[in-house]
Length: 129
Ligand SMILES: *[C@@H]1O[C@H](CO)[C@@H](O)[C@H](O)[C@H]1NC(C)=O
Ligand SMILES: [Ca+2]
Ligand SMILES: [Ca+2]
Ligand SMILES: [Ca+2]
Image (tube, rainbow, N blue to C red):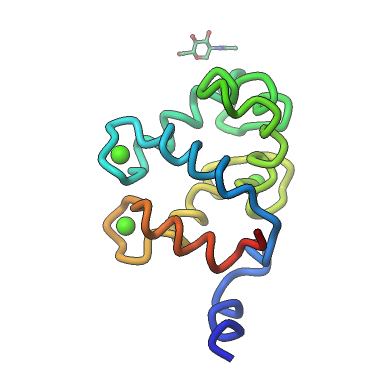
């Protein structure tokens, strides 16, 4: 009952999904550029800009395949998983709308940053491991 109550608070786009937790946490640590244990919006936007090779403010799956492993070599081969995970609205590209949605879902204390604990909490709700 409690689990059900949590799930209906999430938008359909963030429905239960298979997750590679190790990859997600590796990526989280990589986006946390100043290593304070939280992903601030500016950090998320900076990393998104690096992956957005064409500079059109949207990340395509081709750009993810091309540029993600430059952010962190160990993410090689995980590009499609990460792309699909973060394309929350399933529009076929990762945009600021997806990043907005992630922050709304993860940043429960509303301080403008996704703390690692908040991120883990989010994964517990939506991931099948
Ligand atoms: C995108 O922006 C970066 C940084 O400003 C620049 O180095 C790069 O050449 C730009 N790429 C394109 C395709 O315009
Ligand atoms: Ca940080
Ligand atoms: Ca999207
Ligand atoms: Ca927070």
